[in-house]
Length: 286
Image (cartoon, rainbow, N blue to C red; front, side, top):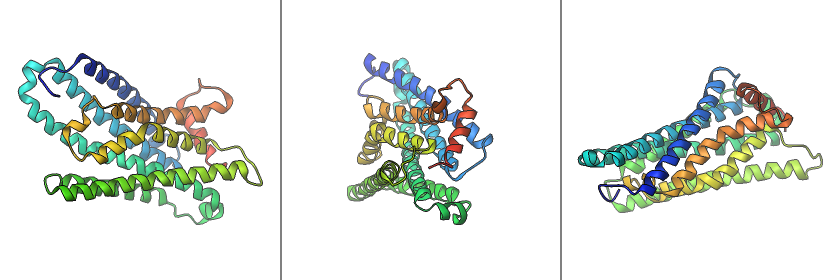
């Protein structure tokens, strides 16, 4: 915000982002509700549940940011003295946004690799795979994201060299996770379509593939920006188009779960619970 009054176009853009955030919160909330309380857990639904929690949390934080921005824009004359507190508020939200964004990236990469391993080593996956491996991997990814982001923000007031090093580490992790998603899904697709026994992709694989495509289309710009630009309150202001893309990515993920679960019979009117159950059933194929 460069002055005491925000541009009308910026306020309109923030309003659009606000509407998308509300839709995404509703969709991810439904996924969390059914996978967390009404669906039997499987190795894949654990990842999807954690991914939905990360997306829901990121959307909630961005919603709070947008509400604070719109409130400041609407009452700029009376609230302008509080801009310093607003910047501290955005700084804290920025820390949490980085955390949930990196966690979401890691969970999607783990889900892709897990699916690939289940096809390459089906006997091990069914008979010898540790029962709580998905939960342990998810917890490790949350811890890794927390450690990295805490280190990133902890050096914000220190030297510029330390910030550059940590930003490079964050970008390296971004590239690594992206390559894991790309290679595992590409290999799996080639095995399905070009192997000696050609098979139709299962619903879970289709859902994962669509989510990965959404991430590369909408999630990469936001991830790149939040790690290239180190903690700075101005980076999360809503004039940045990558914010809109990130909101679309988080909002469309639960739509993919539901559509893939119901599209085979073209019965979209069925309940979300049935769609999610079908998707879980699809994990036994492939």
